[in-house]
Amino acid sequence: MSFFGPPNPANLAAKADIKGLIQTLGYRRSRSVQEAAARALIQIGSSALDPLRAASRDQKWPGYLLALRTLGQIQDPRVIEILIADLNDPNENLRQAAIEALVQIGAPAVNDLVCVLGAEEKGIRFAAAIALGQIGAPALEALLSVLSEEKAPIRQAAAMSFRGLRDPAVFARLLVALTSSVWAVRRSAAEGLLALYRSGNLDESQKDQVLAWRVIILEAHQVPERLFPSDQRWAALPATTQARAWEYPLLSPTK
Image 1 (cartoon, one colour):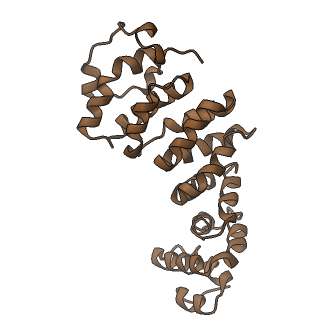
Image 2 (tube, rainbow, N blue to C red; image 1 turned 180 degrees about the vertical axis):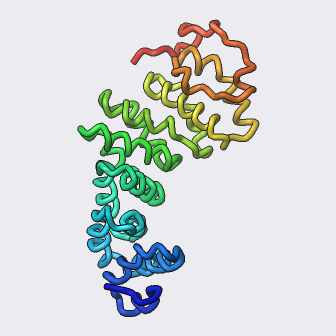
Image 3 (tube, helix red, strand yellow; image 1 turned 90 degrees about the horizontal axis):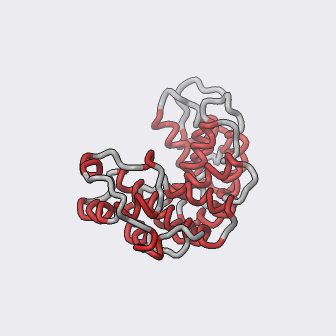
């Protein structure tokens, strides 16, 4: 299909011209035209799903990432499965677009993403962990459950999610998890709290609570130093060696 002027997404939508609308996604001269075509395809719905999927495979075409992002907004149960498969794509841009689309879907994608944490391919486990961390609060209980019950490789993948937490809604739950009897839960909660602290999304009262738990986070959880916050309030506190496992019996690494 060729255009002698800017494509008209409204006319294409009126004709239910899915092919024309998808080609319009690659019209880089006008972002507004691209966005109008994407909205029309989302409104068309499931019948546009397979053509969008095929278009997103053509990585030499300028609209392939927008095709995937548009696909991710269609209300169809197949969308999550398609996006999760793309988490293992060798193209980094496509993987990132799939992560963003899954994060936008949010809670409905959590269970499928948690299942992927047990995949054999390290790349897809890592991408799923990133997505879960960015989803935030809707994914937290599922992640804590995995840390408590699953085998070590799955726990390790789940733990990675906590390093990307940015949602302050999980703060109170992480404080509770900090006293779990399960070592993997305690360590991940500590890393999640540090991630939230570094993100700048905590208010001053919440930062004070993290600082109050600093000894436990540093000593009992053995969190890597590279995860520590770099702000002056944290750095101004003296290092301490007074915390011992026997002082915090729930916090000693028994598992």
